[in-house]
Amino acid sequence: METIIQSLFDGVLMGCIYALIALGLSLIFGVMNVVNFAHGDFVMLSMYFSFWVGSLWGIDAVLTPLITFPLLFTFGIVVYYGMIDHILREHFTIQIAVTVGLMTFLRAITQLVWKARPRALPYSFIQGSIQLGGYTIALSRLTSAIISLIIIAGISFFLSSTWPGRTIRATSDDLDAASLLGVDFRKTYALAFGLGSSLTAISGGLLMTFQQVDPTMGLRFGLLSWCILALAGLGSIPGLLISGLIIGVGESLAMSFWDPRARSLVIYLIFILVLWLRPRGIFGRK
Amino acid sequence: MNRKKNRNIENFLLLFFLIIALLVPLIFGSNQYKMLLVTTVLLYGVMATSWNIIGGLAGQLDLGSFAYLGLGAFTSSTLFIRFNFTPWLGMILGGLVAVGFALLIGIPLFRFRIREVWYALTTCALVEILKVVFTMWEEVGGPVERYLPYFRGSLYHMRFGSYVPYYYIILGMLLIALLVNSRIARSELGYYLKALGEDETAAEVLGVNTRACKLRALVYYSFLIGVTGAIYANIYGYVHPSFFNGQESIKIAILGIVGGRGITYGPLLAALLLVGAQEFLRASLGGEVSGLYLVIYSIILILVVLFRPKGIATLFQDGYQKLVAREVKKKSVV
Image 1 (tube, rainbow over the protein chains, first blue to last red):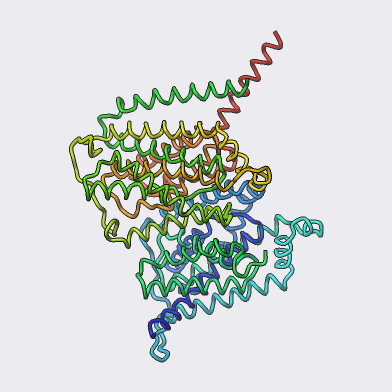
Image 2: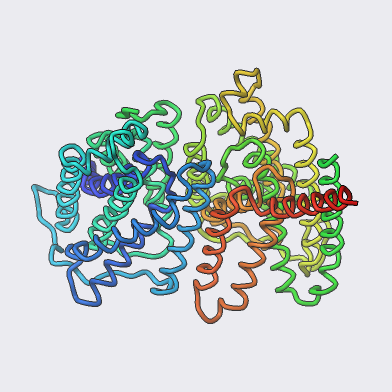
């Protein structure tokens, strides 16, 4: 029983970060309908940036997003105008091929710059844990989960209540109508792509507080965020959060009760089952 | 008329390639390392050509080729290690196991109308699932490599002291894959597949049984890859769950797309150029700076897809058509 509650805690905390990662992908796929296979590698790149900034200036991992966020935002804009803008109307296989090229590129660049060794930052100041009854909660994970929730709430507010956020939602719902009303869809798409990729900067920094990074971990994060997206469906931020939690808890239960190696197995099995049974996701609007 | 000429030039290019390919071991035969590289390039050619059936003709972006490869490899090698079973039959069984698995996944997949990105992601996840399953299944896989018994030249065991025989086996496989491809492309099934690859709903409305057609394409594809997997295990001399490689599976699909979806010899062309370039860059740069060859490779890949979304094989077709047009012009002037 205690193990169950302990893994529930762990899973919920991890799930919040997963939801934040998937939110970035959801912005990109949901708004411009572009299949971005490189999203997981954006997370990987952010983690390396955090490592770089953190070890260069001795900044704590939690604070690195302050610097990596604008970096990733700019990178996202550059990628949009250099690449994504040309493939908006192409067949989805072409979109996948181009973003897979980007994925290989990012992986190769990180390998070239930081070598293939795993990298980690020194202990963050939010290290340590608190005891709650008989349960241990790692402070770094708790803080990361809280920050993720705040960011998700912030994005939700941005999308519903600010002018740029509303243009993003409008183009997502009906591109032609939004264009007729004077929305420049290119700028909106670029904004959405930049925002989607800069969200990985935050999750990257948070992940670096308790995890190391290596160039091959991108595909796992990529598939993971697609799983959450499949579970949640498009256009529902609370749904995304719940799906993130389901994935996080499923993973953590599998690790403590079955086999540590089975963590990804559970995620992918949930993914396939959901696709078969609820192709629009559990909370989907579109 | 034009199409016939196109086919003629295709056959001519194929013959040219074959003569070169047959002669390759005479040039590199003494250097085992180079033979392995050339064999690897051809192996990717076989896989990309087989992928063309499901990915090019039927338009289903399958990212699971290494799932079938691994199943074929494990079936044949386990039979070989445990029961001294000849890989020549083992590879047929490996192909059949791959087909069985493909049907097991494909029937519900097509039944629930999983398409496009979601089909791609499902097949991508399958590779990772099988990797974990085989890592945990200690009787067959497990985290340690299982080496095939070593024989210095035994035809029965498909073990040779050199890579040259494997090279010819893979070349034979490639010809079979190309033949199956062009036969399907010209058959009734091929036309159905092309139709549903363009627009599935429209094909359905016109009375094409899309589910059955896609399943048949999946069967051909998984069988070819499964057989190749058994040979793959014999070339490298061991089996390991890392054979279920998601990254490489994606690469196979990319080769198919870059080569030209639905063009019989396109994926082969892409494999020869891209995998060849990759291995060449790795061999010449890899020792000095790790990762540099991948940077160059990925930039080539992005540029090719951005500027030639229909595939590099169309370069040749366009060039040929221009040539024909010019000759027609000349004649009309005269």
